[in-house]
Amino acid sequence: MASAIARLNDFGQSPWYDNITRSLVREGGLAALVADDGIRGVTSNPTIFEKAIAGGEGYDDQLLGLHRDGTGTEDAFWALAVDDIGHAADILRPVYDAQGGGDGFVSIEVSPLLAHDTAATIEQAAALFARLGRPNILVKIPATVEGVPAIEETIAAGINVNVTLIFSLQRHAEVIEAYLRGLERLVASGGDPAKVASVASFFVSRVDTETDRRLAAGSPLRGRAAVANAKLAYELFQQRFAGERWDALAAKGARLQRPLWASTSTKNPAYSPTLYVDTLVGSDTVNTLAPASIDALHDGDVLLRADTVTEDVEGAHQVMSDLAAAGVSYDDVTATLEREGVASFAQSFRDLLGTLERRVGELGA
Image (cartoon, rainbow, N blue to C red; front, side, top):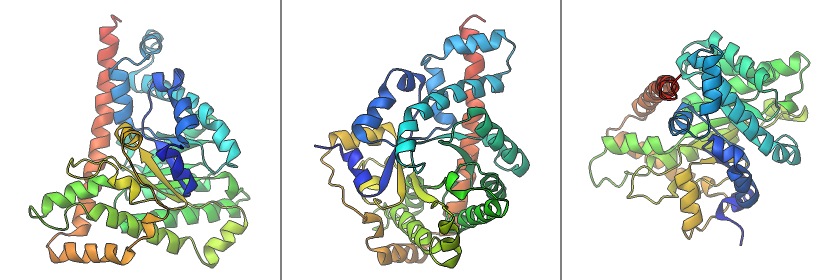
């Protein structure tokens, strides 16, 4: 019987693994996920790297060598990350080729410290993409006010982008517009849009965490906002990638900017461990699965169905209306999540650099 994870591919949804470690890449773990579970991509972020490096995970020799060569702490991190991301991309390259460039991607994130610096984000995105030198790399750029123009510029330059930290429908609309404008500029400059890929990473579980915190205990709305928000994001995706403007780009080979469901591991133990997987199955989407979600799908008797993301969209609109009636401001929830998400990723990056410095000291350098 096919893995529950692999069956997502049958429904038009690509399962990606939200984790990377050196041992996973070097010792066959990632290759096994690709072969056995149909994993078609990998995402990373500073928190994931911090945990891997803090635990050793095979980084010590390279880290010590970089230190002895006089490499600074942040440059050392990028050397370690590029090494892991490059090896992971090579493992996923057969998927990329088999899918005609439509899948098999590995994501690397620009420094979260640049989240409010448009020019520096554009510069680093180009540098990382060039340094890795592989077509199946996605550069992660946060969907901040300053990040949106960086997304457009990066797409216009023919660079693949994973837009991260999207919480609100308004920001999602801005991200889609940035992608479309970037593609139009790329075409106008003679570039080939078929060679550019992008996903819009819409964060899910954190919406429930923040919304539930604002609702009274026992409220029937608890645990419903996140799925409703994602379903409305998918509805927006379907609306924007239709009509004459999109058809003109698609005729030249442009690819859809697929919605990617991020932060899909369940934070509240009262909810199903696969709540943000089985309710959000849809064609032309991605679901990033953390290790806990992988385990839940392996161990549980999960019945996955096609197109659950399009079920009861009217009900999703009603949830949003009911939240407003209950005194919960959707705009404030999503603004809070964006602000805290940027701050959290920035702190994770600082913690990562601190971990590298401590690790060098522990190695007796």
